[in-house]
Amino acid sequence: MSIGSPARGVLRLIAYLTFTLLLLPVQLLAVALRWHAAVRTIPIFYHRTVCAILGFSVRVHGTPSATVPTLFVCNHASYLDIEVLGGLIPGSFVAKAEVAGWPLFGTLAKAQRTIFVERRSSAAGGSRDEMLQRLDTGDNLILFPEGTSSDGTRVLPFRSALFAVAQLRHDGKPIAVQPVSLAYTRLDGIPLGRYWRPLFTWFGDNELLPHLWQMACLGEGEIVVSFFEPVDIDQLGNRKKLADHCFQVVSAGLQATNAGRLERLPPARAA
Image (cartoon, rainbow, N blue to C red):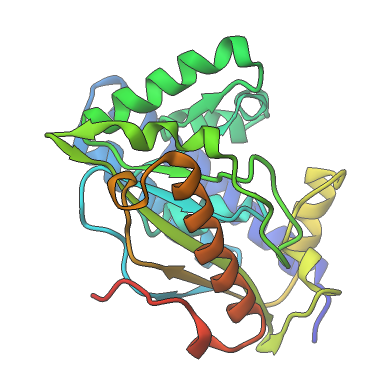
């Protein structure tokens, strides 16, 4: 297993920055002029290309919900999750408010119309209202209900308060909620274990730039994304039961994928 090549890292980061700086003004213009089709499709092209630049192949099980709007809920292990899911799902992310102030990454998040959630309860109402408005106008949302990133080995408990938006009804019907699991599985074809997985996952007190540099120097990575059967709050009864159900499905999906036992995945959504 190759641990890293500085030359590879330099080339990848130059390609990433060049591509980003070329495409970012186009996306910002599309947002300003309200070119809705471009606003939804440019990010998918961008994120897929970034995954290729950084040397990631993405394996997909199941299919994303075709119902619009859908609330996609996924475990969160790294900033790389944004690139992977953003290349598969036409929608906007829900992120913590601090991300808005990050150099470059904050601008990219705003360009994709990310909803920034305040942790303070006094300010949470505005974020919830924006999520409700987006779903009501037919925009998909991508939510990380753990509220933070983990080490990619296990799923942290889902915060049921973040499922409040699932109580909204669109055209008289409950919002579709699709559980999604995302796992970092291989480096240069060799399975990642608990020891090597932090080369890709970003959590705790890890500093962003050193981790990004180390990751860019690595070989070819593989990520497995599984889309499970969508549910809604009417089926489960309330948002606490909805959050618990999604947690159980996503957790089982992550454990099965990390173990290389894809036959143990919960039922995936058929094409």
